Image (tube, rainbow, N blue to C red):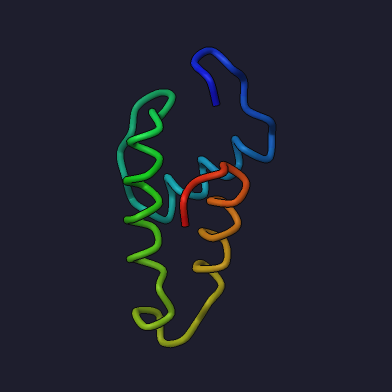
Length: 72
């Protein structure tokens, strides 16, 4: 989103999903670079190979990335 643009409620929920699943401590509004880093961390932590085949969090991360138009 352009600087100063407000996110939709769906996008805000996606940011919170990435915060929670990545474990990243980002104060305030994350930058595009911080969102990409949170996405990489969340994907690594929730990968089905690391979670005994459970895809629940993986699917949440992938949906959050789509909601935020982040590169998968």
